[in-house]
Length: 408
Picture 1 (cartoon, rainbow, N blue to C red):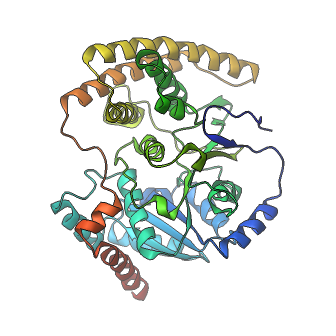
Picture 2 (picture 1 turned 90 degrees about the vertical axis):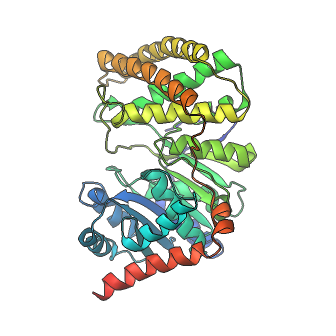
């Protein structure tokens, strides 16, 4: 059972009692009559063949309150797109699959690119951005949830708890972030959040002072969770990064656009496990190494927009402060693991901290040497202003893909 402690400046909604799932789903079904709900699933085709998605699909088929499911499909050939349509065809909810690599959506992407409005790189951020555009174009859903497609411990209770705060008409939340304990297979997971994000935020507080933004970010129990929900109007002026900084970028945008009392976080799962990334000590362009650089860059860029000035000396101080704090966290987590009878590899944890410390300097170097880079995908408000028929074109491309393959 979770505690009821409210940490930081963001409301935390706990899992305090064994509430029956049927009870919560009954309430959500009532809410859906006034506030329709949708689920966004950004995925790679390879995930459809993995261990997680078949179970996720089986769970979603039992969800009574969802009106729409939007799947963003990456890295799929023509034949794989057809198989994806078959895979999702059992869903009782209205659903569409965005074939992001298909010729119709690629043509739209090329037109946006020629206007400087397309995502600069492919990845989860790009996938989510197009799914958000489709949600806005379809105008069906008022409350939307998004979660990853590699959750091997998935239960539809996760979705119910995730969307409830933005679906309940008596709540005033515009955005909700999911969190959970990353404990599985007898060990504590979530290295990037535990050993990079939290100690880096604490280091930034020491070096830069107690900034309100840093207090806000440090209030989230699992800032890198890929699960969040939001009201439809959040999407129009949201500017997100296209790289691994997506989750940090979304939280930063919520901080910019909304008062704290419109945001919350919710405990969505007692048991959560998903695909794990390699540490990638030898390759800064892969795995957790690249992820850590992108996350650090996202934080530095956000702080720069608030007037913070960075120099090589600043980044050296941040790195040194981070390293000391992170090593203390290694000991803290080791003691926590031992007390709970969990495995904890001190050597591997310290290797992670050493790599993250190097990558903080690397992120700082990239930040200083690339002042002209625009890190965010344009908001859909801006895209519509430049291309007024973009929603119609996006809807038409998705629908034509769907009809062509379903007819074939």
